[in-house]
Image (tube, rainbow, N blue to C red):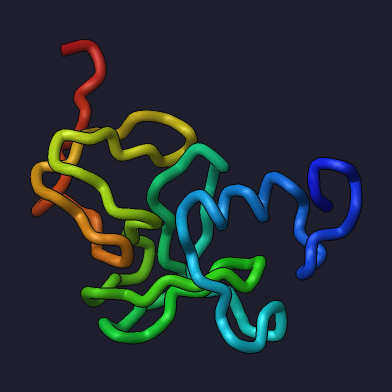
Length: 123
């Protein structure tokens, strides 16, 4: 639904439609008939979690049919960037700060210890 309570073209909530447009995520061909292979845990997250291995050049598909091209291999249960993330910017997962980007991270890139400084609580 849009902000006025009317259905969006794909029947998404206003928040889902806004988030997708904000992140500039493309919608996959076929929409909801495709099986999701990534999950966003919290709406504040700028990374999603792979539900299966995702090969470079293939699509990471969210439950609502939005998709992102994987620019690197994403192993099962690892993170994929939902948007470009600048060096030093926060990495958000579970709606919480988990660290900062060591380097510029492209949308669709694997996010792991090679490009993520993990935030240590209490230090």
